[in-house]
Image (cartoon, rainbow, N blue to C red; front, side):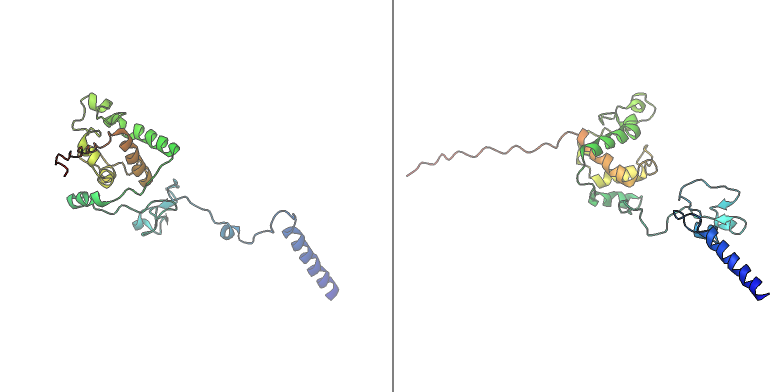
Length: 212
């Protein structure tokens, strides 16, 4: 009887070993695959609303999934957040914010121009002169001519503030353009503007005094 039991145990052990290592190129069988290989969900991917909910008050009835990133975190490769408030004081302080994009390659500038033409040229015009299709159609008034001196002198930070939150008739473009793209578009706008006039140096005064 003991021999039979021993043979059964050996056969079962050998079977388990054979099944779990049936292919040298593949790992062994997983006891709990749903734990070993949990399903990953992209942050902004659509989910089955019959199963998932982003409403914290519906926890329990459905699986709660918070779509928002963790507070205080920044996406890899993303620029630091713009924290000035959307009020008159924030607008004033925006003039002190420097553009984090210090230089752009030819390819990056070309891409910034493409983004400008998609999002901005319809109002501000291809050359930034405020003569885009919407402006010339007379549908919306007060569209800025970005080539005027006021905008040439405007700080990058103030321009970013307006794009980020919206200004007057222009709405916010924070959802259409990433933070980096907004800064790069501003760099492109600078290429459309005339260069600031430089003061002409006064000619040196002629010495009319008599030499002794």
